[in-house]
Image 1 (cartoon, rainbow, N blue to C red):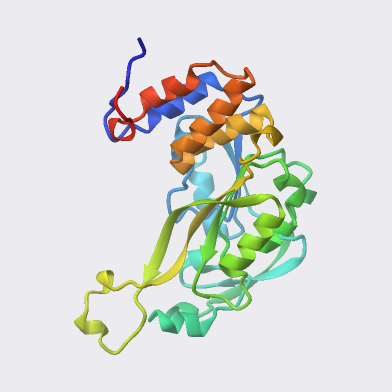
Image 2 (cartoon, rainbow, N blue to C red):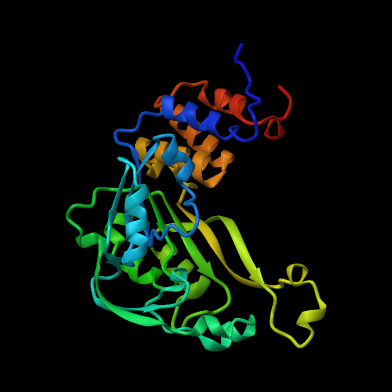
Length: 300
C-alpha cells in the first residue's frame, strides 16, 4: 500500500517535486531562460533550483543587478550582461527603482492616475545592442522563458520565435494600466504569444493600486486598490493536443507545473499522457496524488 504524505506545510510542496525528479528522467535537465533576471524578488523557479531540478540561463543588462546575480549564483546558473530583444540597438531608460528600467518612455498620465507621478522621472539612459535569442549560437534549447522587462516583451518574442518553438511555457509580466509609452499591454502580448502557439493558463499574481483622488487621506488605501496594474501570467504550449508534444516536453511541463506553477492538475494531465505512451510507470499519477497535501486530496 502506498504511503500518503502529510508533510510540514513549509516543505509539503517538495514531495511531489522530488517524486517527479526521481521518476521522469528527461534527456537533459529542465532549462529556464530568464530575460530581465534582476533579483529584486525571489524568482518563481527558485524552489526547483534549490532542489537541483533545473538549469537557469539569465540575461540582465543593468550592471548592479548583474553583479548581484553573480554573487549568489550556483553551478546550475549562468548569467550574461546582455539586453535581449530583436537584435536591434535600444536605449534603456533608467529610473530610481531598477525594476522600472525600460526601453520605453514612461506614460505620465498612467502614473499620475495611481498617485505616483514621481515614478516617471528618468534618471539616465544607456544605449545597448540587443541579442536576439534565435541568433545566440551558444544558447541550447530551453523549456520555460520567464520574462520581465517592462514593455519590451514582444521585441524578445519576435527575436526568439525559433527557440520558443520547442519551449513548453512562458511566464510573462502582463500590463493592464499603461505605464510606458508604446508598450504592448495585455492584448498585444497575448496576441503575439498566441501567434506563436501559446495560450494563457493562469495568473501567478496580479497587482492593484488605488486611483488618486481628493479623499486619499480619509480612506484605507489597502482596502481600495481597485485598479489592476500588472501581474504575471503563465502561457503554455497547446496542451489540448498532447500528442503534438514529445515525451521530454511533457516531462519538463509536468515538473514545471508541480514546482513552479502550482498547477497540480496540469502535472497529472502530463503524467497521464506519458503513462498512456508507456513513458512512465502506470501508477505514477496515483503516487503523485499520494504526495500532495491533505487539503488537495479527496478521501483515500
